[in-house]
Image 1 (cartoon, rainbow, N blue to C red):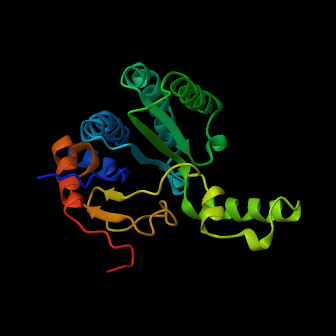
Image 2: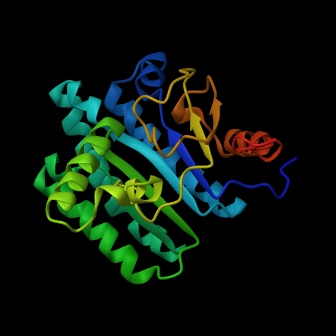
Image 3: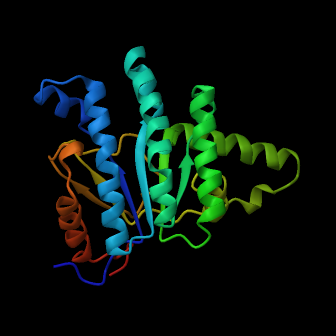
Length: 238
């Protein structure tokens, strides 16, 4: 039974679309489409449980190694998802953001992402839920950019070397103004974070399930939240 100990921020590594497609004798693109359709179910579950932030690992910096056809299908799917769901997101007062370097994406994809962000920001002033898509995201890349920007600001005398602490570093990450995830879920049976929110996940609770992402239901999600709600987070204390 889920108690009052609900995570404020849940992050999910949505893994297993390709394996799900193979098991169903479908293309990898079909698997990704089925995975995207599952996103709305989990968004609904977050609203039902009063979770305030949901971060989804949608496209990693390592995903550029995928075949060209698959990457094109992913960009197309991303645009379709935003355009199809934006009215429903706004009607349910759900804010959409992204983290990562989207400037490497096709121009029409970038345009759709930014339009969605701007429209939800304009119409969802007090959001029930903030959904963050990690797009062309990788923590090592995020850290590299943060270090470069910190060094540049020291050179310009905007900040001093002595100013550097955990809070300052956090303010140079993509996740500035987003709370660290309390709970990270990874589907498909893999048990690693794969370059996802490594700094932010320092004290996150982790949950691994063998269920492939397209099959990860609202009930599965609520079971994971129930497990979280019964854990005791000590943050290094007693």
